[in-house]
Image 1 (cartoon, one colour):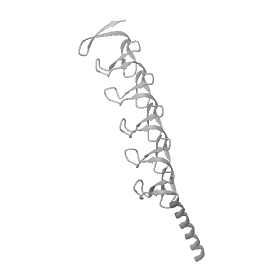
Image 2 (cartoon, helix red, strand yellow):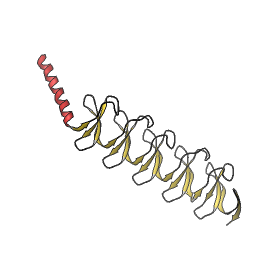
Image 3 (cartoon, rainbow, N blue to C red):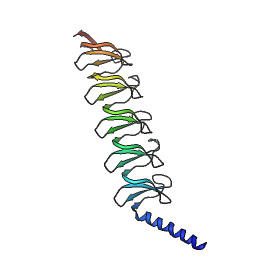
Image 4 (cartoon, rainbow, N blue to C red):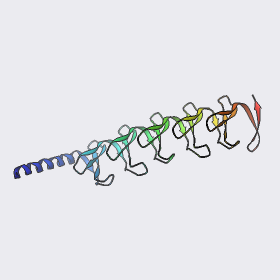
Amino acid sequence: MKTLLNLVLLVLSSIAAYSQADYRKIYEYGEYQEDWAKVKSITGTYGMIDRSGKEVVPAVYKKIEKFTRDNGNLALVKSITGEYGMINKSGKEVIPANYSKIGRFNEVEEGLALVKSITGTYGMIDRRGKEVIPAVYKKIEKFTRDNGNLALVKSITGEYGMINKSGKEVIPADYSKIGRFNEIEEGLALVKSIVDAYGFVDKNGNEIVEPIYSLEQIESKQYKVIEN
């Protein structure tokens, strides 16, 4: 029995020694996650191990940040090729490392984070990694009450539209300019077509006034309408 116990202890110490030899550096336990320690591999990549030496986050990342409540208890990671993703406290890559940038959750919209694709386009994801707003836009502004909780977006070809919080393009990105709602007329926004004609849309995307007019400003917020 004593011989068997000694054999088990020898095996365990060998595993621990092997684990230590696998890493260039082992950081303090609890610094990034309770009962976990960040490790740096001999090739310079990072991962995490538990107190038994088991690798709970594979040491394949160029960078691992701390888990934060703001990010829904997820941690930002950077792949060796420079893309960003996020892992949960089980070590699972919830948000694949496919983005050139991931913003903080709730910074632009509650429960969502702004992401930038490797081709330079923007979208928004939730904490499960779902692209609520596809990363196909050149620009996404904040959702505002003034705009009926819609957000202005710019297509890769330069046209503007507006999306709701479900990612639906309520106002198609077909306009060269979209003004703010209520700026000129209550419940309406001035739009400019790609042929420089003006009209008005409502918050449902309906063209209340077809964009076929030229505008001549008379006074502040007062315009003379001229049919083209």
